[in-house]
Length: 130
Image (cartoon, rainbow, N blue to C red):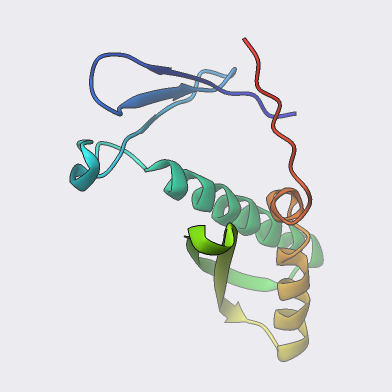
């Protein structure tokens, strides 16, 4: 289970997010909607979670297999279409290293098995209370 805490005070839209292990990051809104762009926007954080999880999952798998994966670059494009109440996430992977076509194909399948991918592609229930 992942757990984070957030706090917003008087500075418009600047949110401090803290993990139980003491890591801290700042989220903010872009200037054009009243923020100061002092950190990732909430949508960027969501896209970042998928990129980070995919990257780490691919690194672990390639290391375990002993493959020459030098670098993984991931681009995430998250789009919400309000008229359809639909979210589209486009994830593009680029691999560097001495990998054959079969290894690249296997890495694509492994990307789809990362934990955040599984979370985002299954039903999500949000329970809110105080």
